[in-house]
Image 1 (spheres, rainbow, N blue to C red):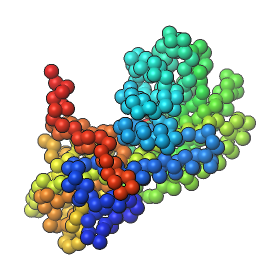
Image 2: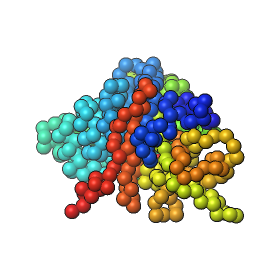
Image 3: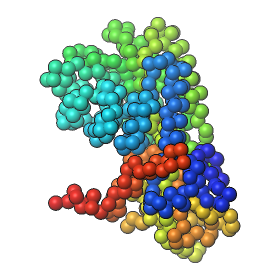
Image 4: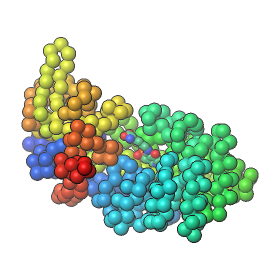
Length: 433
Ligand code: LLP
């Protein structure tokens, strides 16, 4: 059995259990493909972050849940109850949060391409803080805030120029990425100068995000050094002291047993020590500390369950287990070559064989995970589960080929309930004229 997370186990009957519940019974009740989310685990992860933040940085430090990892109404209800802030990247995420009464002042609004309509939407709803990505946005936001008689709180997104050694597509801290304004070129100082000259913007602090799936412990420490150096330069050159610092998200999670463990509270403690020492060395006060974890809050709370449609053996080549899902509910192997742990939901002993776990999209690259070991007798109607799918699966799902997106079923204290219903053909037809 996998050691990925203690919410995965097998009963004496051999049936896979997730958050203590039979995966086969859940699949019978809710149908497949099916996203399961362990609410107790999400809440435990939130508390882990809050506890570590308070211990290391004091009562005003706030983890912001990066909704891009999984954004739906029930998730924002949980974040409101747990007292986390949220990072939103679109009017859609903002509206979803607000629709369940999530407090607008705790929303930090991101995005490198905010339109005038996006800016108006967020300002009119009282979004607490804009994370301004670039100089064009600065001007547009200042004008829009002025037109409304507002002074909008902002953070400035800086690109520290750090390579976090993660997948290329999710490396967001290097100098030449599309996000933020680079330190290295001197543009960051001009960005701050311009922001401080905007009458309708209140510069609260700095933001950076170096990447996702970061395991290298040194990455955040080097980021701290660069950001504090810059804060000191700004104070020296412009006489301004920032009162918030947001280091973004990025802590890695385990998808396969070989992945390293990340002791996040310990990592946060190290960041705190490094930050306090660096600030003290240049006589700067400790700003309010923020981070934006997404994956590490929801990934291990998720599991996707499929029903096997067919098993295909091509002698001398390979074998496939073809499921009722695919790249439509989990595009991460196709996009990033991401690894996953795949488990049979009921068969466990006996002879095993190697299969590619495929989907049913009309595309030969529609592979959920290649070369996985499953019982050789796996056949049509069996259930298989893919672990650790809580982050960037539901939120990146599509209805390619007009397959509907799976429902999200939450598991809490031995019960299950629907958080997002299955997308139907009628839902898709409703958009067509
Ligand atoms: N803050 C910012 C500005 C970000 O861009 C991201 C992720 C986060 C926070 C949250 O990072 P996390 O804690 O989840 O690593 N679709 C990719 C991941 C893209 C991450 C984009 N930004 C994947 O499936 O691996």
